[in-house]
Length: 147
Image 1 (tube, rainbow, N blue to C red):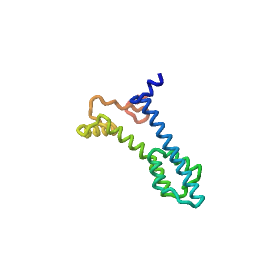
Image 2 (image 1 turned 90 degrees about the horizontal axis):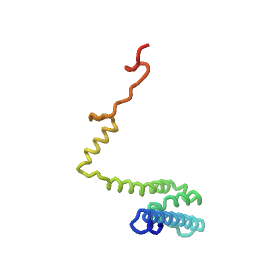
Image 3 (image 1 turned 45 degrees about the horizontal axis):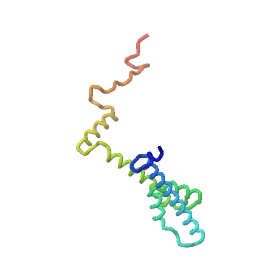
C-alpha cells in the first residue's frame, strides 16, 4: 500500500521529494554557516555573504536562521540580517504567485473579478441578493420599542 502512494506522479511522492529537498537545503545552509564561523575564528578565507544568502533563499532559510542564532554568527551585521530575513519570503512569495497564476482567473475576467471583490469588501454591492445588515438595538436605534 505504501509503495502505491510513493510512486512518481502521486501527491505523496511530490510531498516526500519536497520534504527531502527542504531538509537537504537546511542542512547545507546550517553547515555553510558553521564552516564560515569556524573560518572566521581561525582567520581563514571566508564564505562570501552572497553564497550564504543564496543558500538561504533556495530553501535553507530555517537552517540559516538556526545557525545564526546557535552559533552567534553574523548577528551584528545588520544589512546581512535584513537580507537574510527577506530571503525567507522569496519562496513563499513565489508559491503564492504560482497559485494565483494557476487559478481560473484570466486577463479578460480580471477587471470584473477585481471589481466584484472590491465591492464585496467595501460593502457597496448593488446586487439584490446582498445580505441585510444586522439591526441595532438600544438607545437611538430605530428598532427599539418604547416602554
